[in-house]
Length: 424
Ligand SMILES: [Zn+2]
Image 1 (cartoon, rainbow, N blue to C red):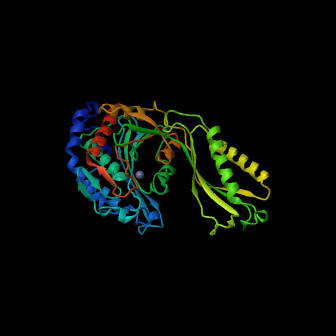
Image 2 (cartoon, rainbow, N blue to C red):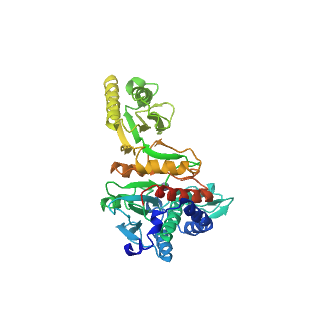
Image 3 (cartoon, protein in one colour):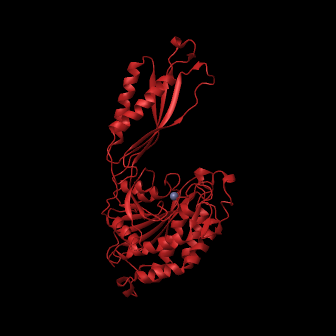
């Protein structure tokens, strides 16, 4: 593969972005056709009731084979799929100056399950093109990224374009249930190096203005107040866990909001959020005083506030209640805990280049943070600047998911524009 590069030489010094964008525009029909074809191959994550993304990954490999674009396949053993392995495909365009640094484009090939089939107006596994959109399971999340990066990759190969560092297009398995057989496995193999950067087109906004560079820590806590059940007419024989739970819950939320009220304008909303959410059924009759009260809180904590500091406050409040109401205990359980890594610096090269490439299209782009839960966090935790960006209507994980065909053309063009901002 290496040998085929630099024979033309010239093109890498003259990356004509207008020409490249024109080449991408010409691929609009092809991208739509590829989206239709690929979306017919189910790729539901095995831990969400599907057979996995193996067959779809093979379609991707055949696509590259047809164009004589070389790639590497990383197999990760998984006993839950009939093939016994999950596939990860990486196409590399070697760097002209260094092969020790890479700019990654990461797309995931697995999808979630279709959910409530009655809520779908079309069969989620039979893509339908209508009004400039393609409807089908996974079309946006994350097939949009798969198809747009493949098109960009094809143009780069056809034009023999290199930049200073490696460009790596990674088609990942298993993103929807934690990336254990995908990105995390490749991180363990040492494929990502210090100095690498990544664009992850797995989130965005309808006008494509928002570049996600940070996220809050995400914690789901379940609280259980243990008191003593009794007849409601004889309350002195028990301890009303519901009463104590309600008081505790309200003080918990109020005190967290008051104590951790700092704002960071990078985020929307700018402050940490603490919300009481799920409440669990207790007794089955209105005359029974509950001995148990269980409820949840969703917390999104700004990245520079340690989750342990928040937990310290919570444990302190629990201590106060357990002292005040003799005989009760309050248990806590983490249903989810993801501590946010340090944000990708807004001045990092990949963030700046992407924002500039978007602005070139007339869209006022900006970078900021969200409430948490993206795979960018895995990379940021390894000190790899990662940006999450695409132009999309945010239809992921919803019935009647669709991709806007024009957005595919726009995104692929912007990727090439980003690359033109790196040294040849
Ligand atoms: Zn996704």
